Length: 233
Image (cartoon, rainbow, N blue to C red; front, side, top):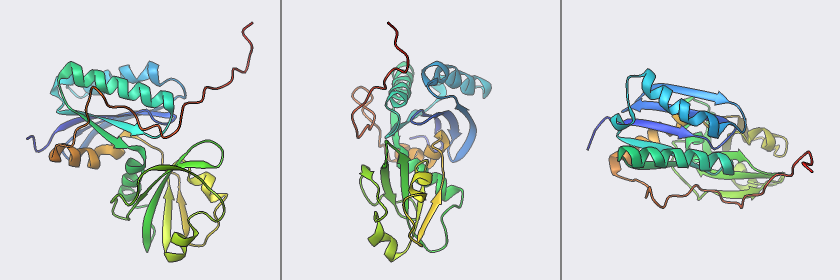
């Protein structure tokens, strides 16, 4: 087993589209583009460029990593399709990391956890008053399954009564307008590929690979198509 694997990471689960390249614990490069609904057009060139600009080709990678969601239905499908194609083409394994886990890791790595923090609630914006929620310890350990929840002013009150909680993610702003508990802290953290480095490296070293052929994104909710703003006929 390679001790310091070369990993190519892809995250297309939000409005941001990002790819990152790492060697062992070191982040070599990362490219982030904010261009909504352009993931399918930009992800291929981003992957080629980050490899080429750093002197690598796909077969140099030891594994490919993808954000499994939850998040944008279309964006997730694009990212997973590209990652699968790379895995099959280079004959390399696939590693999947959830959006809430990478958000928690980014919050920890950026020292956003407040003093006395008892938990990190990773919250990704969903429709209306809903968020996708993953709960983690202040050290990033998974404490609960990921779920879609409707948030009210009384949500998480029992946990908040017990200590300080950091709500991190692109759903933090929404929650800050609903929850007013004094133990609630909020940090907007965007989902980007480099947040997958630590969990992906741990997964590689322990041999926790996804089944490339049958892997599907974590949607949690059914896809709802948007309504066209302008009639075509």
